[in-house]
Length: 412
Image 1: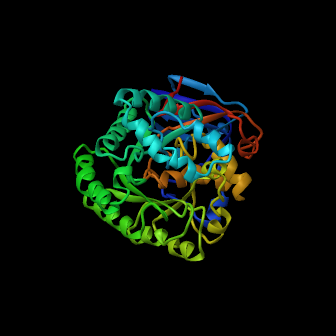
Image 2 (image 1 turned 30 degrees about the vertical axis):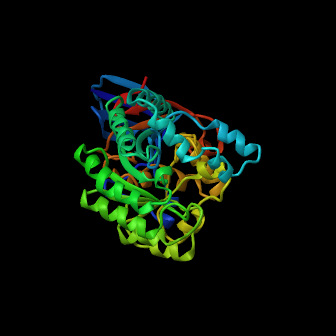
Image 3 (image 1 turned 120 degrees about the vertical axis):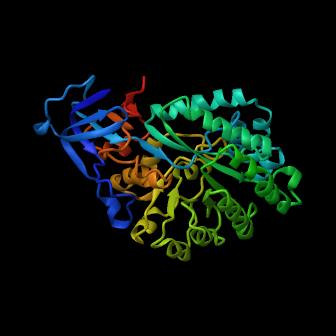
């Protein structure tokens, strides 16, 4: 099937195939093509150009994008989209002055989500997660990473990853899965952290690998959760099963996790709300990309990742939602792009680059997603009639996407 999009006001993020990620000053350049057309053949971008060069093409479908922009779909490289239930009562408790520790003492936090998930059937978990997935697709997300981590038992962690894999079959959105057994310490292991690490490495991992349920492995490297030694054990175990690492790190404290991640050649280090100079130095000239999660900072009122400092130090940067029930119950990448500009000092060019091409790199899919490039998957978003791409982060809180194309097909 061939689809032609014509009269495009501006085709945004037009790149050559050899561009895989952008760092430093490169992030300030966002290549565009005005008054353009784009041809989709089956599920891939076949060609594009200015309207003055449009050849006579036989097509099955034409879309008139007069006054509209066309961008590659957003790529969300860090989510916990598969979870059970909600935690709005904790949200209310925080407003009423309860501390994180007091909420946890009431049975709240990650353990609350784990308990709900353990008591939810795989089918019900799938139906809840499918609804969320369809919501984020409508908001322009065309590729997404989904982590486990709200199970905290072998059975529940495997259930989460099975659901994430099953979601891939429901829609033509690319899904990558990440095993995050080391997200928090289950109550039964509160005095035996090494016992839980052993269970992750010796019990959970072999079963997950046997069913091919994960693409990556992750750990929450943070004071009071898992330390550097724990992180090394988990990353080392993941390597044995061919799982490249990702790390939750520097959300509240800098304890050396960034350098550990670089030493293990992890694909991404995520959160980074607290960054020391040595953390930034450790990331320079490496294959590890920093990922910022601004909607988490907004929701739980913590500092935002120092994007300006990282970009000015010639680092790359990606953006993601951290969609989860406790600290970021939001999968809207449009809001994330706005927050990056409003709260993190990023320009619209930098934010869009961070949410497309660099985000694709943070998922290991930069060769097929994240830009308007011949041969890449035709995952596209078509905006409303807007004055410029700068209007998208400027008009925050609004969804200016009129149509979404996934795998070359219009999403109805």
